[in-house]
Structures are given as structure tokens and as C-alpha cells.
Image (cartoon, rainbow, N blue to C red; front, side, top):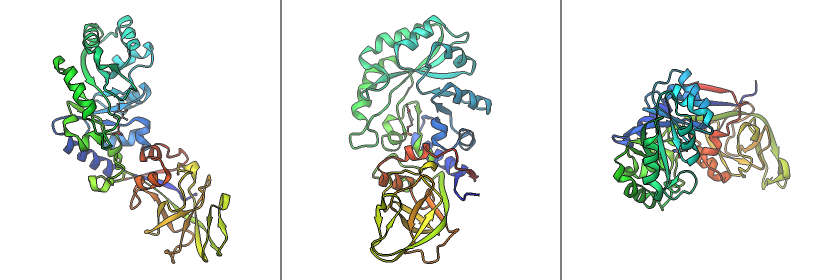
Length: 355
Ligand SMILES: *Cc1c(COP(=O)(O)O)cnc(C)c1O
């Protein structure tokens, strides 16, 4: 069998949830499990994160699956209904949709659910992606509260720069100032805001990436935040080459040896979800020792430097990310984010669940 696998730790996710809760104070925690729980598997994440106060997903299908799995906590639909036809299911499954555009209010007015539902009303406080303008709050809140299909209203916004120096205040302060008069529970914090801006916690927080053990901050390692990697992508060396000075390795011959060296060929490529743009020097671990990739990543293979791994050969274990190789470091080298790498774990990679 091809030796690649993703080892996914239930205990790491449970630990990371405890870290989130410690930062959340009195706030309730929605565990964000969209995108197949950031690549970790919805069912697995549900078990690992069973202590969450609720779950947040993108689609009705994910929400329905969580209910089938026995989830009894609130389920937040992050973009709400995509059509009027989804209203009935929201009520049947007791989902909390986010309402962010007028069309969704019209659907609810025209086809009120048999059982009134709770909703999160999303306001745009500066990200300019989803949400009603803050300036329209009085009319929007009044309209939603008057809908017979609505049982309760909570308020929500989302931050554009919670992970950066600009922070959240430029969005949070107007959001709170404008909406304070309604006296409604509110939610604003993603992982970065939860970790760095306690004032943004409100009634419900919405951590995602931190639950999987990656850092939302470019400049703070996950370990420093007390997080444990939930996914370790690992494989083995399937071939060893010795290259001479001046000889190249792989497609495009992007890496050229300056001296005689041993190169390990690893059974992992971009079709497994490893980033094709990871350049020479991207960190890996071979036989437990730090090393680096060499040359261009292929579809099914990549090459690593065995100069410092004298004992390594065919069958030696290689960690691509996870234990001992922060996924954030791999992402940074490849010019992307840990979010993208974790979500992109390919379906062909066998998953092994660990404690
Ligand atoms: C995905 C998402 C989150 C989680 O963000 P992280 O940065 O992964 O913590 C929170 N809120 C909304 C609206 C989201 O779409």
C-alpha cells in the first residue's frame, strides 16, 4: 500500500477546544466545522468537539449530517439559506441561519416556517463581504423581529483583520455602538479575535482554525498559543538517488546539487494536497530530523534532502506537516495559509484516527 496517511488526533482537537474556551470567558463556543471540519472529517470533529456549545457549518447538508450524528446543540448556518426551499429544513432541524441579505427576509416573510426559528442577523462592519449596512440597523432589526417565522434575533459581524496589527476595534466599536440599543446577544470573534481581542467575545464566539491546531497569526506559532496540531500528514521515502554536483532534481530541474548528495523521493505530491508551490527549502522531518524539500513538487512525489539524515533510506518516515513540522511553516513557505492546506487534504489520502 502507498505509505502516505493523515493521522488525525481526537485529543488534540479536544485540547484546542479547551484552549478556546479558556479565552472565551462567559461566551458560548460555536465550533466551526465547515469544509469537512477544515479537512479533518465532520464526524470525527463532532466527536472530538462534543463539548462545544454549538457547531457552525456552511450548508444544510452539513447541518443535516450533524443532526443525523446525534448533535443536539445549536447549529449555526454561516451563510443562512441559499433559497426559500431551505427554510422548512431549518425549522425541522432547529438550525440557526445567518440572515445577511434582504432576499432572505423576503423568503421568510413569504414562507414562514411551521415552527419559528432563531436567526443571527449579520451586519457589515467594514469587511464588505456579507451583511446589512450598519446604518440600516433600526429598520432591519425591526423588520426581522416582526416576522412571524422568527423566534429570536441575535446579531453578528465578521472581522477582516483580526489577525493583523489593524485589529478589530475599527469594526467592533461601530458595531457595538450602533447596535447597543437593541440589547440583543451578539457574536463577532473568529479564532484570531478570540485569542487576541477578549472584548470581541460577546455571547457566542466562532473559532475554527485554532481548533485544528494551526495559528491564525502569521507571526505567532501555534505552539506559543498552546495549540496542538490535529492533523499530521506523513509518508515514507520510496526511492533514494545520489546526485552529483551540477545535476538537477525533478521537473524543471529547479534544484541543482552543489555537491554530491543523497536525495529521498517521498510518496506525497500535490494530488495529495501538498502545495505545488512549496519551493526548495520547505520544512519536513525525515526519520525525526529536520530537513527540507528539494525542487518542484510532482503530482505523486516530492524530493527531500538526506544530507543530514545518513541513516535514512527507503521506508524512512517523513512528516510533511503536523507533529514537529508546523503546517503554518509549510504554508508560509508555499505562500499560502494553513487554512488552505488543511482544507485541501485530498480524498485519496487514507486517514488514521488517533487519540
Ligand atoms: C470560517 C468562519 C469562522 C472561523 O474562522 P477562523 O479564522 O477559522 O477561526 C468564523 N466566522 C465566520 C463567519 C466564518 O465564516
